[in-house]
Every structure is written in C-alpha cells, then in structure tokens.
Length: 376
Ligand SMILES: NC(=O)C1=CN([C@@H]2O[C@H](COP(=O)(O)OP(=O)(O)OC[C@H]3O[C@@H](n4cnc5c(N)ncnc54)[C@H](O)[C@@H]3O)[C@@H](O)[C@H]2O)C=CC1
Ligand SMILES: O=P(O)(O)OC[C@H]1O[C@](O)(CO)[C@@H](O)[C@@H]1O
Image 1 (cartoon, rainbow, N blue to C red):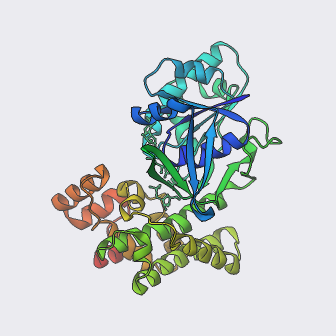
Image 2: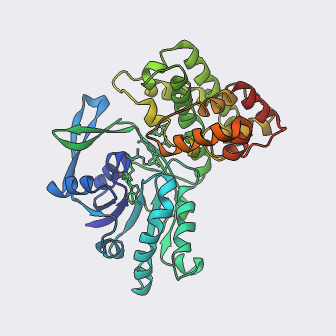
C-alpha cells in the first residue's frame, strides 16, 4: 500500500486531503499537535466524515493512524512515505518544516527515491513557502533537495467543518470540491497520484480565482456580517445590503482576473453564482468567527482582499466594495483568536492609518489607502 504522511488532522486534513488520499489507495499517517485528535484516530485506526448535501451520509476512512507532533516515529514515517502533505494553516508551515526536513535528511542519507510534498493551505504558493522553510532546516542545499523531493503548489477548495458525533471529533463536508495540483512540478507529471484532483499546467489562474473570488466573497460576508452583529454566514447573506456588497467585492476581483488571465465574463459570473449558492446553503451553519479567523493573515497583500484591490488599482478599476471590506476587517474582534487580539491592540495603540500600512503594506497617500481609511 502507498504511504502518505499528512500534517494536521483538522477539518481539511481529515475531511478533504485524507478523504482523497484514502480513495487513491494510500495508508495515511497523520501528524497532529492535538493529542485528543491523535488518540481518537488511533482508537479505531479510522475516522468518520459526513457528507452534508447527501443527507449526512457517513463515510468511514480507514487505513489511518496518527502520531503526536514530537514523536521520533515521524522521521521513520517520512522515510517510508510516497507523499507528504500538510493542512496546518500557512502560518504554521514554519513549525512543521523542521520535522519534515529531518525526515527528508534521512531520505537523502538513505538515497531514497523522490517524493511529492504538497502544502494544502489557503495561501498563494503555500508549497513554495514550505520548501523555503524546509531548506532553512536542512544540511542539503536546494539542488540536492531537488533530487529527493518535488514541491507542487496546490489550490484547495472544499467546505469542511468540525463536529462532535457520538463523543468523537468528526468532520462535515460538502460533496463538491476542487483540488488543483501544479502538474509540471510533480515527481512524474504524467501520473495523477491523487484521484479526483485537477492537474493544471497553469495553477496560478485557478489559485487566484479560488483565493480572490471564493475566499474573498466568503471573508467579505464574515467581516460585514460581524459588523452588523450576525453570528452565522448564512444569516448575514440573507441581509440584502450585505449580499450586494459581497457580490460587489467578488465582481471587483473578477474584473481583475478577467483582465489578467482572460477568463470570460460569463464563466466568472457562473463561478460567482455557484459559490454564493454554496455560501447560502441552508444545510450549513458556518460560523462567522471561523470564516473570519486569522484576520492578520487575511490582510496580507497577497491574500484574498488586498491582492485583488491592488489588482483593481493596477488596472484603474474601482475598489468601492473591496476597500469597505478591508476597512471592516479592522473592526473585527474575537478575544479567542490570537491574530484578532493582536490586530485590535495595534489599532487601539496606533490608530487606523498606521494599522493599514502595517498590516496591508498599502502606503499612505495612495488612492486605496485613502478609501480604506475613509470607509473605516
Ligand atoms: N476548513 C475549510 O473548509 C478549508 C480550509 N482550508 C485551509 O486548510 C488549512 C487547514 O484548515 P482547517 O482544516 O479548516 O483548520 P483546522 O484548525 O481544522 O486544522 C488544522 C490542524 O492542524 C493542526 N496543527 C497546527 N499546527 C500543527 C503542527 N505544527 N503540527 C501538526 N499539526 C498542526 C491543528 O491542531 C489542527 O488540527 C488552512 O490553511 C485553511 O485555510 C482550505 C479550504 C477549505
Ligand atoms: O481557511 P481560512 O483561510 O482561514 O479561511 C476560511 C475560508 O476557507 C474555507 O474554509 C474554504 O475555502 C472557506 O470556507 C473560507 O472562505
């Protein structure tokens, strides 16, 4: 049986990547910092996922085990692996990199064959970020590493939510998904190691369409919804004013992608409508605090809100909606979200102008800066 080591047994780890790896014939060793999750997987060497839009049909994923993040066996698991994947959040890639590097060093010492390493995170080129972090922790240099590992980037799209079922952590998923893998960076670009994935020559257009339309619209619903006191995304989107503004932001992003990649207007409209339908599905209750989580990451100039706004500026398009949503992020509060706490503290101590530049890197004196500051 093929072996995969997956870092992060969270919603996407279990509900998406684990599901597809299992379907593709892999035995999966999860590496996870949460010991309760490790124990839960190891109790039965399986876990359950529930398909929301198929009447919560249960799918049991077997041929799995889990290791706690400090365990020595991780190096051995990587030594024997055919693939390594992550879904730990982009902010944590630097933390898993030393562990992966240790396993890779052992593969290098043992002259093992090349394997694919994929960072399945919501971020632009997350696998490149992971590779850079691995190199910081490896004796080998990049050209030697390239003989032992390939690093395709990935675009990851599936709704996966955590639930407790019969006292055990489980995951609810949507049956629809899109996993796009950078084909030419695979160990063997003619193989399709994960069933159901799309193997793309040009990942950038898929990655940007996903991050700058799907995640942009979802984030817009969360931050505007929060401002008006909603708790659930589906409820926020029943508010006509919020829906109009969310669509406005998605359309501003779409205009940039149309110009940059040559997508047709009709295709992008269909894409937007399909995603609004997903966000408003009555079967799902998606917590605004989940979708709005880690606001500092979401204010990054390469992420879902600021990057499309900068694209609009480049093409001389309007940023009426995107600027309002970026401004709304600075009003977001969640005492249980470390980044939200840091953001609020910085804002309270330094004011909106310094905060805009500090978190978005948008410079004072530019049109976009003025718009965000005014809307705030
Ligand atoms: N949940 C969703 O619907 C989607 C999430 N994503 C992306 O997938 C990634 C994971 O998101 P979720 O699964 O929702 O989050 P999650 O919080 O459910 O899962 C992340 C898991 O990684 C574990 N983890 C964190 N640091 C670790 C470390 N150093 N070593 C081992 N495990 C570690 C956490 O304990 C947690 O179980 C994120 O980058 C997110 O943006 C992408 C598409 C959809
Ligand atoms: O996982 P992140 O990057 O924090 O953002 C939440 C987003 O990710 C998703 O969970 C999946 O794309 C969306 O539901 C939401 O837009």
